[in-house]
Length: 239
Length: 239
DNA sequence: CGTTATATTGAAGTGCGTCAAAAAGTGTGG
DNA sequence: CCACACTTTTTGACGCACTTCAATATAACG
Image 1 (spheres, each protein chain N blue to C red):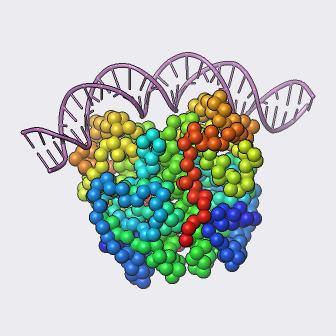
Image 2: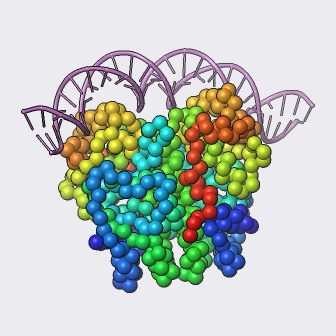
Image 3: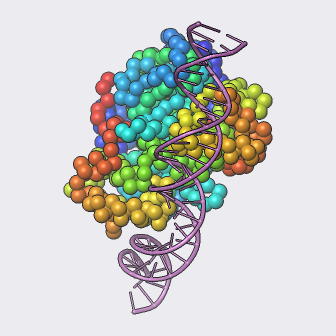
């Protein structure tokens, strides 16, 4: 159930058998949700944290006038709201973009885990810091990169992250999201997002249709986006 | 020395005397740096974390073409790179915007702290999650808010954060940053930032000159920016 | 006081938004 | 399997926010 999470934690540091079983013991239930279901509302009080087992989920923030920014995308193996363990309520919504499977870890169990397993705690702490690193890269994109580069960069990020959890098949991956929602990740309108995607397709960089992203040449896309995966911290930590 | 940090931690949860002294014991040295000194370079290996005692510091990310995005501003009492404790290297630079005083906490001491003080560990974890919450709000600004609103929103954020550490004097605060750098926070060019600031001044919302921001009517500014401080988590956590 | 950094203004260009409509895709029930 | 309604994608025309380039004014500083 939490194998993808362990896969990703072990990408960064060793997890002992004891730690693994303690972590497994944190999860007590699972659930399936439909696409576009709001999993958590901004401000809602939390008593458990949610792991994404399968599907696609986003964090999004709204403006009073209805404009919306998606601040993060989550792939299988990601915690959706581990930051909620310390924050107790979120500053944003958490919404499924596609049908998704979730697993739940009550906060009192995570507290007990932090009392007994400081090393594992630091590793979970690390995983929320990885989210923050991605937020920063998105800030850079939103503030400085032009539409097509911004989109290309996000495709590169997803390619990397999905590869870690074995969700890349050849040069393509399943990506069940609407153009309008993709645009909300990029800070672009649906109309302009469509033009940006046409652009990338014409350049032979990305073909995105039928809930599937095809990347003919990932190196070419990386060049175009000037993508440096350092911010994803995919190599093993040195300690 | 770390009184402002304690002030901010206690804003969120109780810190026992024992925890306080353990935290104080983490810091072993201090230093003063000039304005525009790069404190940490992206990618650099870290063995200690830095607390800002006084001054103004930013996190910034660069693009190969020289464009730059400031992803966070730090006020006295902020950790500059506590996330570096788990990440071991940063994905961004850390730079002083004004002359600043820093205090250093070696990572091995923080590790020992996490072994002995799980509650305090969770509180430090929380403080990195607060950084992430601000990153998300900046993503929203960069992606959806227009220049003048974006600028006004940032002034509101700074007003709140500086108030917590007693750096607001009446309706004004010291803000020793150039317009160009302020623009790099907002994803705007120096020229356009200047026009945005002129705009805010003409509307009587913010006057920013001589390293000083004057906010005649904070409520009016909050209205204009549609500022909701929830993402700063300034109230006490319920536990 | 001169020198340099920073702020300010103008004019022209571009990326992206907005509005509106058409085309293509998707799902449903007959 | 088709007919239908609905959603999503696509395209066009136009407007605006922001950028770029260039010049001038003002402030900061030794």
